[in-house]
Image 1 (spheres, rainbow, N blue to C red):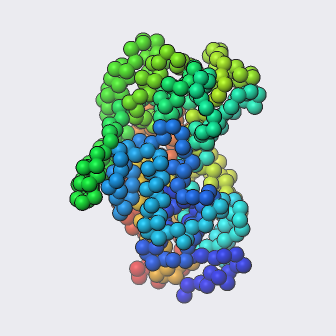
Image 2 (image 1 turned 45 degrees about the vertical axis):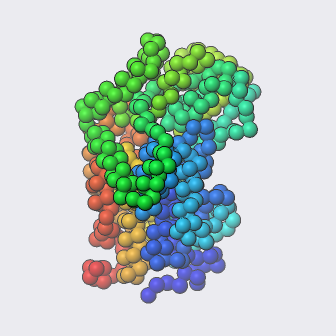
Length: 500
């Protein structure tokens, strides 16, 4: 028989708690409802859903995956205005989908998760938030991999007399017109907002520790006629989605071989040489590693912006700040009125790991010691009934929705079987975790991520790739298509499970 969760604690109790209101959390809520599970709650720290698309509002913010693939397969949007949708449109799609699938009654806003503890006594999770406590049989941790911004540790940064902010916390109240602006970092956010602010500012100084390979972005508007076609002939949009998926899967497969990526690199090199004519600037912007070792970027206006007379690329990291003077590691100095940090997010060490406590009272971060490990990117040791979206070694060079839907199918199957067999708790077998991670690391050895000649956020502070799924997404979807109870430790009579 199922436990009566209401009697376990004075706190509100649910069968499932979903943490986070981005696409992963919303997808979990939709799947729970479709599975007939209504006794769940989605905890969101902010006042609206949106995740990364709520947090990032910088100029030019847009997706680098075509909209036809950057959406739920079960909820196509025929009204995308561009091949690559912008931030506001993506957030609107997320919020519209939440309304469409009647998720909002399950959402609790202003509930930032402070901690979550598993108890072997109650076989439940206790989740503490800024507004109180909740308990649940299962938790789905959907806090996202690009959630907490990285702030660089720079000597004298507190002495800066101008304005300073991270790109994910854009200060729209600051007018950059006529200002001397310094941008720290040249990653996926910077290549979008730099071309937007370059025409406004007096002087733009871009601090670049390592250049990126940048491909042309095959973007264009989608006219009303195309939107009407997608609306009245959904198979046309599905065909476009399948085509885009095949292209990204080809790219993802190429990451297995440095030789294959070196051929692909020719396009990126042509893009650089076509846009940048100044030999000195071209040398600064030419990477010394194989494309794919770092995240592959796309832009049509990044290089043209850097070639403008009011822009200086400083091929060095920021080392020190003295008042309004910024000093690079190579000794060069510039003056700035505003500093914009395009320094990315915590990827290899997700902040949620500091708030999730296992049965021994240890948080994930303390157990992992900088090198996250799990099983199938979804469960971790000693955290029964806890499911982690975008967990260790699940990232791929494709749409996040491929991962989200594969993981959610796996999680829903686990919950379905637990309910069917009255299984009190499920957790991964430590021996299987070790064997799985050994296979993952062996498969990563010769990939471009590990041997492409760069340092990236895929590699953790211990020099281990704890981020990337080394195989195709076809294999990911196949391996996550069924939750095999025999691979897990169960608090249940083995004979009863074997009958399933």
